Amino acid sequence: MLELSALEQEALGLSLRVAVVSVLVSLPFGLMVAWVLARREFFGKTLVNGLVHLPLVVPPVVVGYLLLLLLGREGPLGGFLYDVFGITVAFTWKGAAVAAGVMAFPLMVRAMRLSLELVDQRLEAAARTLGAGPFDVFVTVTLPLMSPGILAGAILAFARSLGEFGATITFVANIPGETRTLPLALYSLVQTPGGEAGALRLVLLSVLLALVALGASEVLARRLRRSYSA
Image (cartoon, rainbow, N blue to C red):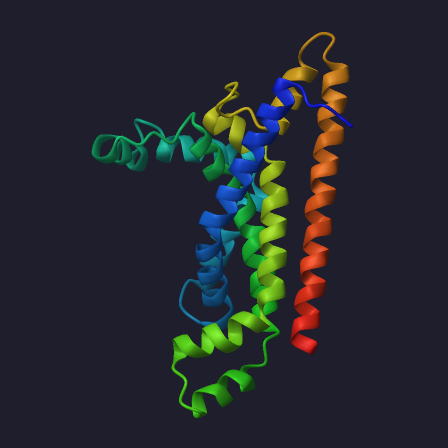
């Protein structure tokens, strides 16, 4: 059985915490944005869609720098959070979760939007004719039918968060025990003479973690399909 070193345990635990928090926090916002983009027509929709997908097309370092400008101690939002609530985001694990969530957000929204667009709106209309309100229709009809897309979006975001590097190192640096996730720990070992063996172990650990996540998503997807076909 593979025994993890202290560095590996620290990086793995932090990566999992960052990935889980980023997905849980961004999931409601992703669902809302996906619904708006799929079901509403409004002026500026193309611009909103472009902004949502911007992290996919700009260098991650750009996203990290923009987050630093916005959420740093001297930034408008970061300064407000610190002065009013005493919350520091930059150079903390919370900032790493923010960076990971921002970078993974487009993948989450896209998966959920595509799933929502496949939902037969006649079923929703039938539920409304039976007296169900908009919220009830969404919870009892729309949400279950698009649940495979929600699951896919969450898994994609989780995997993307685990592998986030550029925005994270720019926004929260590479602080041992605080922001050094698996990719950053791997980067540190690559830069250290004689760290090749440790870097390879982290590579294998990252691959194993990704395979476990993908396997879990496949099992959950099959269970969802069976529950709806029953």
